[in-house]
Length: 192
Image: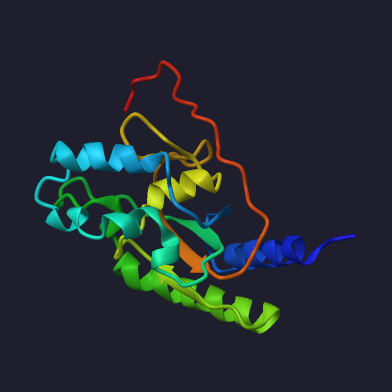
């Protein structure tokens, strides 16, 4: 017999695929204990360069319950940005992720649709969408949700598509089934 958390998890993952997300993984909301010393060391070494905002909201970056009251689950999603059309060799070089519309708006709309779907299908669920615009450690949550592993180049890597995807989160106050983290597949490879 299927329980509600399993049913809700499957509903959410199926709808995420229908909305065009490449992958969807879910992890329990809570303090990112292992990431705290790494983030502190990274900031102390001034690895954030001119991104001074990275020094703000240290606690919120590590604890999603400070961003969404009663948060229980982090729904991590990826959206492919590898373009179908290649750049003209004689034209200006534009990063692949910059093709088309601003991804913040495109993904935020999809996340709103997913949250609306969850509320319609499951009931009263509170949540908040995050697309690279708030103090959320996207890569850490995506890795914890089984969507890939953090490579030696510090990117989230997927065995299926490499690193050509955006990462987004939907933090909700709904208990769901949680995915396992993916193991690191870099080994001795240093190609990146």
